[in-house]
Figure 1 (cartoon, rainbow, N blue to C red):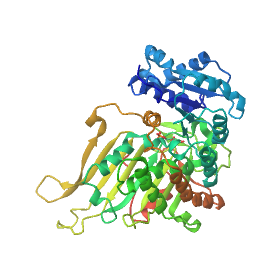
Figure 2 (tube, rainbow, N blue to C red):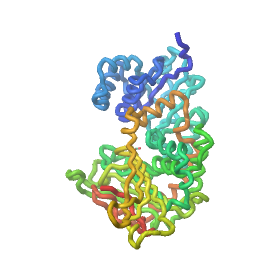
Figure 3 (cartoon, rainbow, N blue to C red):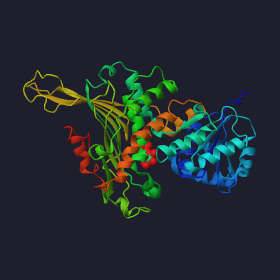
Figure 4 (cartoon, rainbow, N blue to C red):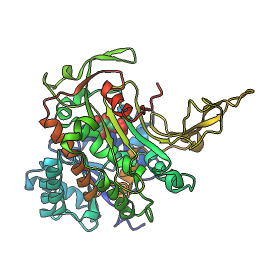
Length: 486
Ligand code: BG6
């Protein structure tokens, strides 16, 4: 018999929630299918609902059938489901942890506690786990976003959780770090010598990070209205992506080597003063429009949204990094709901040649641009100049196109699969450290404060467009434009 005493079990708080049904259980199922989940690992769902195991499994099975589509196989699911158990727990009631404690006591393994509840329950959950002696040696905790509403609330959460778990046992999720293309960006930058000499202010004119979604707020209106795009997307996903673009080469891939370098980027982000906020940020809110030929309602008409809401569904920011590598290079960040296209990409625009040897106008369409697209397709495109066939020396942009799915023809792990696997194996590199998270809040908070204090409303934009005109103007003021292919 193999020794499984160090193989963790996973306990999911908020176990009946949408994320668990839509992402976590399907991801664990896929890890099971691909033999990436240790056979000894058990999965215990917990929530307030007084369900028994069969009832919980019935709900989970139906959801999995839905979300896994053709990957769902009855016999494989039945085998996977043997790992699953359920214990009702009211996070605020110490005594209600007994059932969970008993369900886990079957073996004394380390436990991975996944907190997929509202963050105001994190403190009670951790204290009750601790008081009930359930935090066995090697146990760790995964924290799902949103991790706070501002710096103070995120510090409070970190203090509460930190009272029971050491920092190197806390796995803060940012699912963007689990995306294969984000890791590929590290591979591209640090696995090749080609880019590094060019990856600096001398050669790069500007960087653009776009996360555009076609979807609106859907059924999450109430949550979203309290949150807005800056908290929902920029504070975490976009700033983490920016860190990977901008960080210095870490000494190794070890968690703190990488996270130290990301932290330096966050600390070097130039603070945006309240007086500058109107010039270097744009906040927008979608109005009714058309996406893919379908009429889409405006944000203010969505369910759960007050008619006078000032919540932003679009943000664009000109950020700057005060470092020798990046001084003077604008980083344009933007994200929005109900946009023209679904695209997540990083665009690196290189500077012009210092002197043209060609006839006047031969370089008029000059493009030296690296486009790292993460969604919907994972591609890296290098747009550069080449000679147009013919008598004249006319130069036109040509594209070197690398399609990662074509190139590797192998199934990629989805973000939650990767992050669940890493947390079960205790690998912290792709999780956010407390100081990083707090540095990110420190940078976004003055923007939030300035917006809250301003009499201006978010700028309207039609659903199905690239956002308010002010977003083009933000980039246009630097003589630039957003990279938009459609
Ligand atoms: C989540 C946000 O963190 O990321 C959502 O809360 C957003 O509002 C989602 O839709 C986007 O993730 P992805 O992986 O679809 O780009």
